[in-house]
Length: 202
Image (cartoon, rainbow, N blue to C red; front, side, top):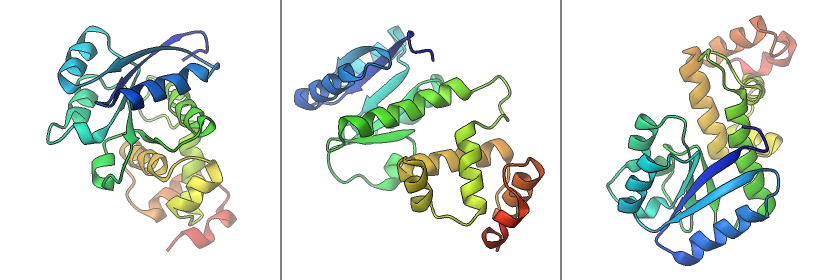
């Protein structure tokens, strides 16, 4: 997405304060032109998505209950990026369906970085579904060098959940399920040098 494009964001939470707070932070970010919509409940969200499909959905997982709207949204609207609002402990299994997370304790810089990550992924997408983004190549290089998810997150200044999401997307694109296979791919495609990954192959 270009900087001058209007990026539609839907913020869904039953707390007016949390919705307004996130909206206020987003309005301070000058890199993009955001169109922000605050939505109080799932019924309103379902209607909104069909009428005004957002580019980014920021939603509190606690209001989902057993209604897994995240999966249904991704299935019907695959271009929508989903971000979970974290206001308390959320099981990692619940967060697996989201592209990233935003904590109510995150500062403006952290939130901006996470949004830039998601928007950069959009810029890197091509019609070839097998094409890896620059970020995915960086993560492959880290993985085959034997780095943990936490170490990768720290090195690239992204969340661990984002690392996991990227790794899942890499596996889906390449259909490679082993460290050795990924190492071979990285060498053949000149993502890393062979001497860089000796310690990463088990």
